[in-house]
Length: 210
Image (cartoon, rainbow, N blue to C red):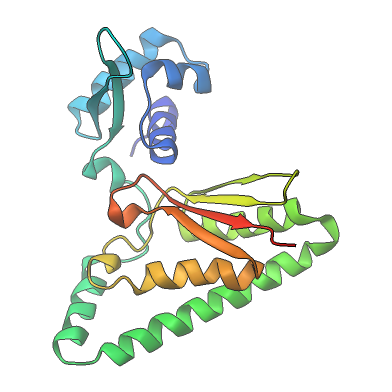
């Protein structure tokens, strides 16, 4: 089990997608020499890998991101058995059962989220989104959110997909997750990044149309 500073590094990479040692130094306050040792060890163990980014003349910047093994450290919410079961249902012509199951599952999530947000309604939007974020955290999404007080828009980032294996068989969870936010906020929602397409997170922009 990875703990302490190494776990903090992995969590940052999971949330942000890709970072330099300088970025991690700034966000953790740890010494660069300590971080370099941690990065080398995590790289040797196969949890992170190097990548390079060129933003101008000179040498490209050295950056790090999680490997598949690194991603596997985080909650997935399902197993290979679930994926096999879905494949079986598809193979035997039971796609309707799959759709009904996931629709009911997401309907219950909407009900739970609405209840939690309604309880915080007297405290304002920030408290409501905070309650939603806590629910998402418990489900394994590793959420982050930003409120724009000027225009009332909200950005919610899901840094982990707890249905990673399921999505390999059906994109229904992806469709229903977008609808989840539309039902909760009754406003324009746009998914601007998508883990299933190779992005580091699923980002949802919720616009206030009032």
